[in-house]
Image 1 (cartoon, rainbow, N blue to C red):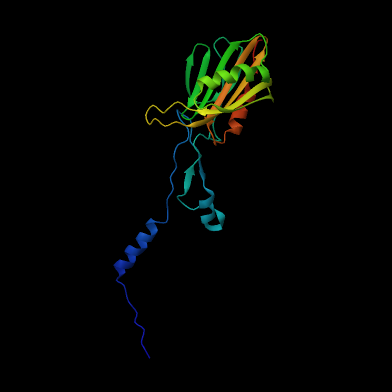
Image 2 (image 1 turned 180 degrees about the vertical axis):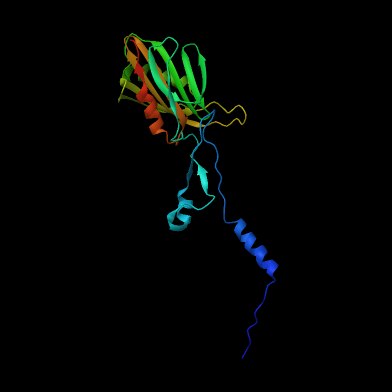
Amino acid sequence: MTKRRTLLLPAAAVVVAAATAGCGSSGGSAKPAGSTGAPVGTVTSAASASAGDGGGPAPGTAESNPAGDIPDNQVYIDFRPANGGFTVKVPEGWARTGSGAVTVFTDKLNRITIAPVTASIAPTPGSVSSTVVPALRKSVPGFASPKVTTVSRKGGQVVLLTYQGDSAPDPVTGKVVRDAFERYAFHRGGHEVDLTLSGPVGADNVDPWRLVSDSFTWQGR
């Protein structure tokens, strides 16, 4: 009968092997999805959730929201232009810039543009399709997939134009992001406010954009 030999490893080798195996068991990192002053939320991937005991997330596997997602805990504040006329909620902490009557709020990949204009006639899907769409086609790089509809918001019936386009190149990296746009045209008494909400294609901002567009209210007119 052949005798089986038992190989005994030194204790130090066992410790090194255990440490090496442990180093490869964790990973994952969170990366920011917002910008100026906006909080960044993290979620746990489905894969890491299934890896934990009892279906819970495994330690060290948290990852960030998809690029452009506005965090669920984002706080909103009222914006009212200097000359009044309307209010609309915007995310607190976003960077604000302005040019003439146009006000823009940005948070890296997301953008809100508020543009009051004088318009004696209320916009219609037909007028937006015949005037606004051709103008955007000339001014927005990669303009595509325009769709014009009428929707109801708390501020009344509005004409909604959705489309896609390329963002301006990042000043540092030169990267261009494919954006999805929602342009709401509010009108009352010869006054129109075009509210445009934009962010990366694929970002889940349905609820934040609904909150902003639903918050628009005419004041004193």
